[in-house]
Image 1 (tube, rainbow, N blue to C red):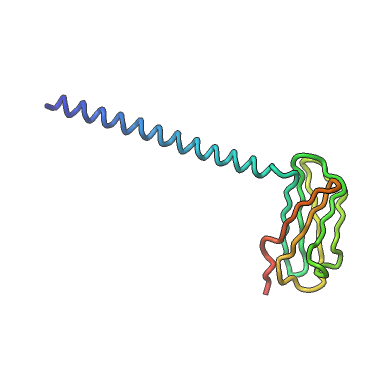
Image 2 (spheres, helix red, strand yellow):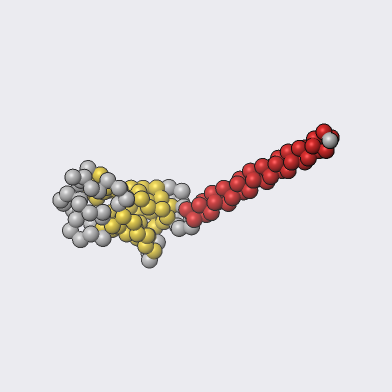
Length: 136
């Protein structure tokens, strides 16, 4: 009788170990796939731009090129009359490089400013300040 219960216990333990290995392998494969998709989506665009508004009078837009060299890059404010200079010209940005546009507001920034990044003649990327714009 003890031999039969020992056999059942050993088979159950083996099945548990196989299930655990399968579960860990599935979890790892799923996470790898999700990370790969994130990387692919991140670099799908030619550029990445991040706008941030700070200290109630300044907005900065960081522009980074991923896939190609960018020519005649301009940051353009889409909020009429908010900034002293609504267009900031960066010129050319090499692949893998970044640059920053800085905008000085005429008054306190009290709503999230929106921007267009124009490059390579006819391409446009839009972004807006993501945080820091409510300062009161």
